[in-house]
Length: 65
Image 1 (tube, rainbow, N blue to C red):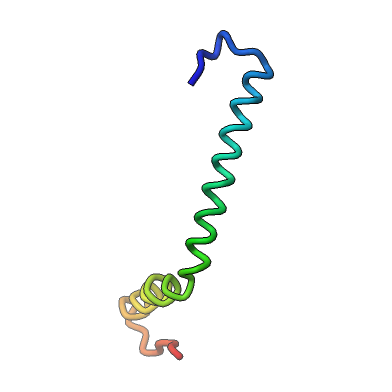
Image 2: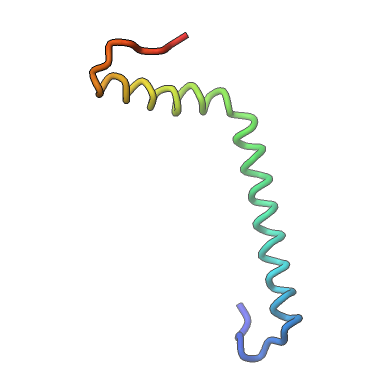
């Protein structure tokens, strides 16, 4: 990281652009990873948590297909 006192406005904009590009690339990679594994994520994480909530609360009705 550069020293903030020596950078011009355009220097700050250039550094911001680099951070934004890396962030967008990371978001795209994460979106592809989630997209390819969405069925596993839904089955093993969200539905398991939902089932645990119903069992803890003592409800006799469990919605499951």
